[in-house]
Image (cartoon, rainbow, N blue to C red; front, side, top):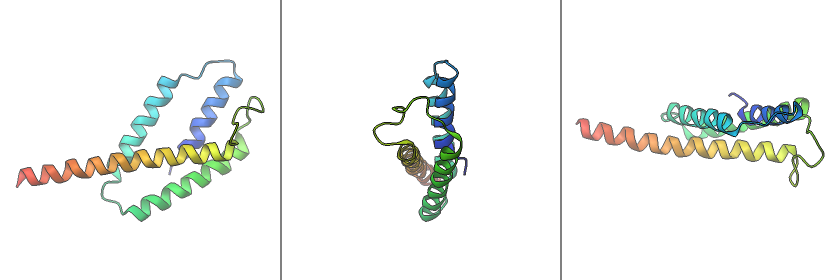
Length: 116
């Protein structure tokens, strides 16, 4: 239940406020590793629980974003606004978790079938 959408946008805005360029390679690598690890670990968890945990994570991320993220300029999160951008990021991460989960289940089932 790490609020990754919040952390992603917080990092991005803090880097811009400091006058530094946000390194997308580092952030993308961390997000990719997070999606892969969570997708593999959630292989045996019921879909409903995964959905509920991701919804709670998105809600927490939005609440933290409202409290802690200050956009560097008024057009930073345009045209959707900060809350919708954080929700969209959370949904993309959730879809990534589900894709890795499906692939992990396919590999795991194939391995069991080959071992027998």
